[in-house]
Length: 426
Image (cartoon, rainbow, N blue to C red; front, side):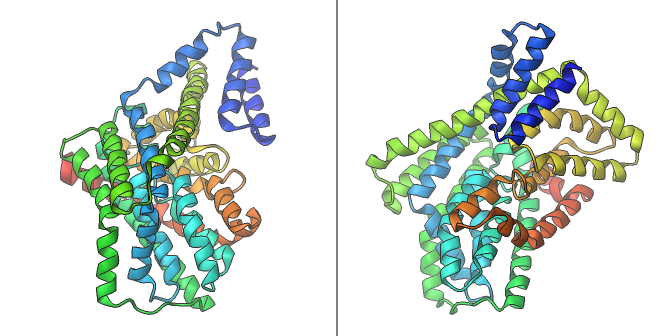
């Protein structure tokens, strides 16, 4: 009865538009009061949820993304991608995906990617003759690459839940992220050819080299982060600070979009975003503790394994669960609540924890572009001043592309495990 109340309260609050963090907290509070459990458990479980060293890198990567946006780093990434691919039919769509691949490899968050790339590319593509719903759809779809290509905030959360090396998980996301980017480019190109979208003039080699030189400092950031973590020079948390300092120096002294006067606003935005994320982590941990105390994860595992113990069927069921939850719940909350329970099922049928983590994050990223709670859809709809249903229809081909890549990642473990095994050993 109490568990039913927990879920019903949570779902009703979500449906009436209460933010996910408060929905989790209020539902948990209702359960504790009904059960007569001391409310001292609330701060204890919230603190336990955020008392992990690796989570300190979340504010660092959020700050790095904010510094990039204000410091004109995003603009230089987009200009380089446009110079490289703008002469192809639908080249601005390809540049949009390419920009997301590069930007996502620095910020690690899909929403930041959709907002920063979208604010530049959606108006630019519309002005160049592209349908605005297409521009918004390709922006939202490509934003899902950000948390797959390292660094990745959801990967950090998953690593903190399991104790798996975050560096290994970062590497595991590299090949699936590149595969997803290439698949989205192919989809965008095919749509562009069918609709006869414009193509630009081929950029002279000298200008291309000039754009590459100006974008070099932005591109170098991802290399520094990855090489530093893999080479053992710094931890993921330290890498986030290095990324922030690097973005500050490059934005202020190389691209000169940053000024000291802008820093208080950037820091304020970073504090607000990071506080919201960590509050969500803490309240989701409380919700997850209640589920664990009621043995809900074991019940879920038992139900799945009673349906089938065939690894192919079980992996398909896991994907369906994650896709469904991702369409309704924020990524980090879904990871904290579901990941430990489903990880036990996945490892029970022979999946590597790192492989499962990549699959789970990719599922939940796809959820960011599906109604009714597709946050990235809301972001690009706002930028493009479009109804969300219009963007949701336009994104369907890209959604099919993402699902195809998801199935490849789910059923071909080498896509995720080859690179970490190669560099860090098995």
